[in-house]
Amino acid sequence: MGCQYHDPNHNGATSFTVAMPRLTFGRGTLSELGARATRHGFKRIALFTDPYLLDGPLIDTAKTSLVNSGIEVSIFSDIRVEPCDDTVTRGAEFLNSGKFDAVVSVGGGSVIDSAKGALLVHQHGGNIIDYFAAPIGQGKPVPSPVLPHIACPTTSGTGSECTSITVIRINNLNTKFVVAHPYLLPMEAIVDPQCCDSLPPNVVASTGFDLCCHALECFTAREHTQHAKIENPNIRQYIQGANPFSDMVAKEAMQIVDQYLVRGVNDSSDSEARDKLMWGATLAGIAFGNCGTHLPHAMSYGITHLMQDITTEGYPIDSPFVPHGISVVVNAPAIFQYTAEATPERHIQGALCLGADVKGASTKDAGEVLSKRLIELMRDTHMPNGLSGVGFNQSHITALAESSIRQSRAIANAPRDSNLVDIENMYQSALSYW
Ligand SMILES: [Fe+2]
Image (tube, rainbow, N blue to C red; front, side, top):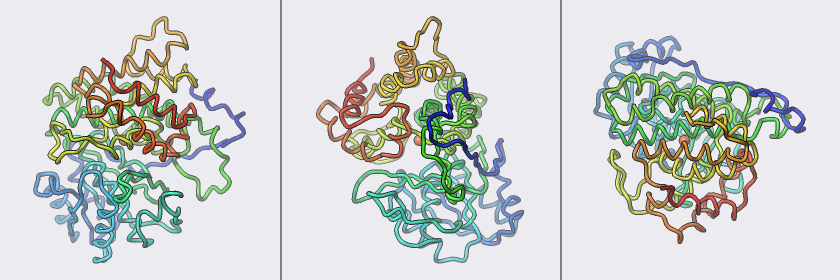
């Protein structure tokens, strides 16, 4: 099915590229940082992290490994969750202030994305806003590589260590946008599941649904053959639509979600489940780094733009705050009910990978089958009940849709076209599920 889906008769792209960092995965590998940095000849490193990790054991391990290898380390930790353009500017100024050979990021997606943004602005100047596509920014070109980056995730969801994407909040627009460029891909990813041992259940659930949606969105994304032909191979983007490689990796990640998400959330001592989720997050990151997400991520940005006054257990962050994975999954069952019409077989296959019972399901049941399985997983991991579970009601729907419609690239990667009214209808269906 994989290759048949990528029908070459769409008159679009006829090829795709696979890119990922050199990847090291396993317990204890964070302590290999010094050896890897030495191998590249780095002498002076900027270590990006956040204030919550700064004085903890993970930064101690990373720093000790680097220092014991004879490397000089300077730490930048002025990074908030949901990093904004100001964070990037401060990070770039930090890089400007020292003659660094490379950046190491140790943290969740916010830290890794801040590092990518800071590397870009440090190397090529301006403000991160300049690099967003029009009409938000000017689509400023990225003419040459940035400094090398070794990314070390500490949550099992982001996948950012394996992508050429950074997601940054623009303060004066109060919402997040994406910069994607091949030069933003880290040169190495060191993924150590031990970093997730102490994560609270709700963080494992939220990041787990981020990974689940990365994989499911890739698997159901518009085929790369329906995107524009590649005219210049040297500016080929890795965000290119579904392709046989992203399909393969996404399927494996979804099967991991089926087998281990509920276990990993409900039993913090289940290290097998938690390690598998970290591997699943890595695979899902590789998938969306080579494909791109679609409507669940696009519509999550409306939620983070208009967050209501609620708090989420497990996150040491002031209200209003909705964790990224939760902002993505609360809309997902409604969205896949909508998109299933375009590619029902893909949606049924996705549901099957996530553990749904698809016996006897016909193509017209595809949306229902997939949506039902997502809702089961949400209920089994104590997720909020749709939009109403994160503080929204009917009166917010127009504003949510008007915010999210600006995410044109992700919306165009969905298998079915949607306009403002369609997005309003999806938010309406996402208000509550049970
Ligand atoms: Fe995500």
